[in-house]
Image (cartoon, rainbow, N blue to C red; front, side, top):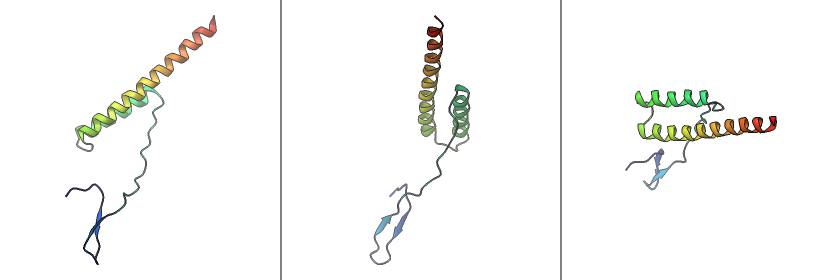
Length: 88
């Protein structure tokens, strides 16, 4: 039986009870610029290569970072177009 959460055996009944998941500290990183996203992608890559993060998880994280990068790129282009249109 594989379980992601810790379990405890009830002493009176012998039943296995799953304990509630422990709160983990939220991971924070700055993702305001393409440089920030690039830095985080490199970190995920290094962690996957060294076995700290599972490769499948790293793939999912990288996909999310690519989506963030696309939003940053689109937002920057939108701002540039607005500046150009306001010059006329």
